[in-house]
Length: 93
Image (cartoon, rainbow, N blue to C red; front, side, top):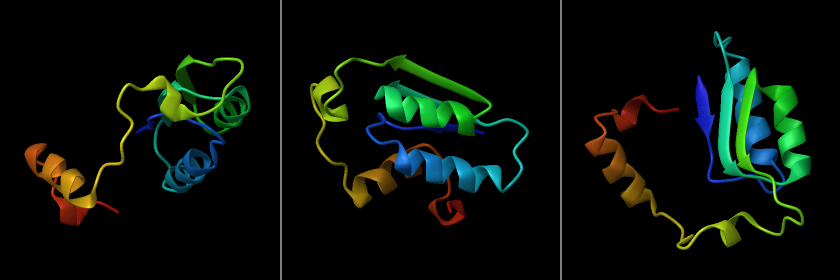
C-alpha cells in the first residue's frame, strides 16, 4: 500500500492514515510526500516500512509555500478525478 500526501506539516493526519492502513495488515506500507517538516518526517519514518520525502527544508513554515498553486480541491473535483481514473467512488473507504 502506498499513501501519498501533498506534504507534511505536523504529520498527524498521515500518522493516523498510516496506522489505520497498518491495522489492515498490508504486505508493505510506503508513505511518500514531496516536502515535510523534520519533526513530521521523523514520525512517519517510524510508522511506515518505507518513507520517501523529497525535501526537508529548514526552516519549515508551511506545505503551501512549496507550491505555485495550493488552492483547495472541492469534493466534486475529487469525484470527477476518481471517475476519470476508473476507481468506483462507492468502493473507497
